[in-house]
Length: 56
Image (cartoon, rainbow, N blue to C red; front, top):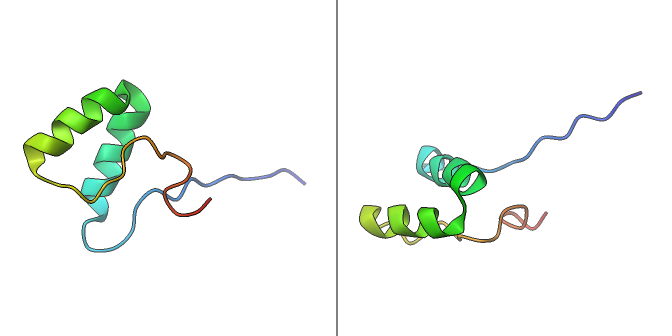
């Protein structure tokens, strides 16, 4: 039997914002994500904690 891994990266009302920032961080890195996050004035996403976002 094979394994299927799902990376849970968003949830709640602002799921699309969190997911978008997660994808940006995955592709472009934390520095780019911080710039975008500051321009959006969205302090809720924790940059640099991919994989630890939900206690994983």
